[in-house]
Length: 233
Image (tube, rainbow, N blue to C red):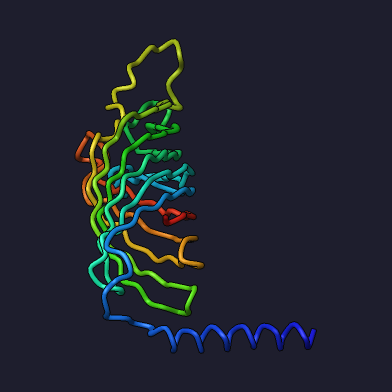
């Protein structure tokens, strides 16, 4: 146990010593003007609806998906680069909405809507990246910028029921189908670590700006966390 602690302290001391020697914030010229990389990861995402739309119950779960893409670093200084990228991503989630709809002889009736949704998208982020040298082989990145999301396909499984009405009443449901929009714009920001000049691990948050539903009165926003690994050539 004592040997393990001493080894960990020695490694930490070595990292900080190297960080000082390699210039934590290097304002000099970059080693290369341009390089490319690949990224792969998983995401957890959500599309919500304004709380005042459904007055009884409003729940949007966070689903999972995958992210696959390529990025290009355009390096201006050792500490600064612009990173455009191109990603394919899938997103998923469930929703359940309940609103008071009418007063019937049996009592107050509620419109209940629930279902599953999955999106398949192209995502084009353009991020500014600031780099800090933690050691000769360890680099810490802070990244922020806008993104453009193009929805290729929506898959929606949806149901709606009035609990108090009997099936033989054959009353129409009378609600607008919840359909996502085909485009979004937002901001992506996060952090990553690069080790041995090539291998990268990162986490990012994507915050959509536009309303995610074709029925604008529903409001809401898209949002997602992305956890990824990568390799820079």
